[in-house]
Length: 251
Length: 197
Image (tube, rainbow over all chains, first blue to last red):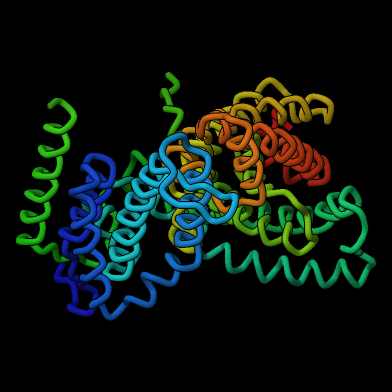
């Protein structure tokens, strides 16, 4: 049956091969090779229209991690002192180790951020299903993302209701730990019951059906058009990175 | 003749998929609950432990992996690297649930402590090699302390985990035990892992 154009999405597999290659290079390449790779990645992402989205998480979580890493490892490794800030002495071995960790983290985090800025999670889900991935896993992911938002709202409502009944968050740690139950019990009870009902609805659609007349290819809601050039280029890139990494490992 | 059903089919089917998704969301939302009542604990594995108990070890492992994947994609990429730790938590809690540790609080507590040690063992190499021993958690000062007294990075990361994880996991196990005792039997009866509760 022909699929209407509005339900067709283009997907370029080059992006996920690029991320895989960079993640592999982050572990397999020498620091001297990783630095130009990181510089190139930073230039590409800085020119991307989604640069704010890519770098927001990086600046919030990864940059402080890297800075603390330099501080901790620079001070407590053995080696020659490179510089000193009063009583704090930073050694070369520690700074080199922290640099390796920092470059590896930056490569991985920025490449993943770039990937998710270019590709919608629904598109990658549909692509993975079309490539043979078990749709149960995709459904778990999509359902859990939807549930998080609903559960947060419900938790907030339960918290307000329990506060009105005397839940006090200013008392000692043991009393506060006890207060977790009045929040989690109603939340879990309602969502376990709801999940069981949802399970019955899924069974009614023969979601995990294996045999019988209902078995067959599920009707996709979205048709994925795969970019063949991107697929071939991506595979060549990944193969090259694998070869370089293996050569380095066995050299 | 009865058809053989694989572990994957038994634990990940139409009935359990919404429960696993609930477990993933619970792992994420409990973090918010902990912040609301200002507790100095993570308690980010309660959903994993609960699902491992009421469904099975594989479902628990999947819950933990998806929770960290979701947290990694939406909040902090660092969570993705700790997926192996969640697999250990899911597998262990699913296995001990089958021998009945969640039936009594005094069996849940030591199981939680053992789980904490296992988590520390699993997370130490990741924390040390991926992040240089620093994870931006509240216990980073412990890594600093252990480094200052001459321990290696892996040793420091392990000792830091050992100082924080057993308490965290023991409290998580107790919370799961109390959750299971407070959920009505009529609901528990419908769960695949009813015998574990």
